[in-house]
Length: 325
Figure 1 (cartoon, helix red, strand yellow):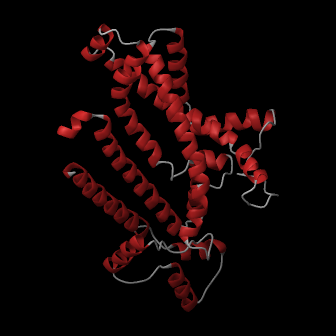
Figure 2 (cartoon, one colour):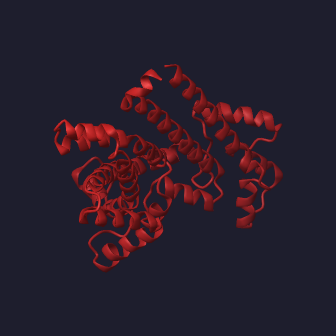
């Protein structure tokens, strides 16, 4: 319990530090989003109207420390301000709508990739040097080496444009009304196949390589030799002796992947025009929508810290030696 409390305090301090950087970074840039927005559009406003517009967006003049305290208070009360690009929608509504699509896509892809990658890594390490190991290892290294944008474009070109098997973009058929119906759910699943295949291709290689290397490092340990000498089956030794201990570093990789779920896959979502958090972040950057950018970065930071805290807890459950440490 003392260990978990120390980690919890550490993650809270890390979150406040990230929020502080998130506050000061846009304010160190010259100008503000309101002035940039109207100057780029060639519009002119009287000073009174411009000041009123700044108040609407939450850009209040005052001492920096006072703005900082107000900003921290708004974070813990869930008030992230209003979006500039999607005005008058609040940032929470903009990100909340995209959150559903990102969790559905990235969450499913991460779970599938982790399960398949871990299983392939276990079997490849156990059959080290075999044809299966060579094919899996080369394929995993190739998958991790190709940039996500290249994989997205290749998959889209082959299965979307050339063969025409799947849609080229969007999360569902625009002509359908969003509703909890079999037709709409089927359209969402159909439109999500290509982004899902792309993300699984990008993610599965890393899990496979990590698990294979961890397994190989453990196969020569004394307890593995003892388990085999006791006459236990290969399947029992592979799963309960080798894989369980090799799983610890892989869980850390899973935490990083989970932490990036709420960040969305920016490249994949932009290529497929998928309405997730990654695409929202990209559009916000183009529009200099600082409230949305700050809200998105805070969500990504909080998710990453929570995922790492869950990993700390899982380490204690997976490794009995840590309970007595």
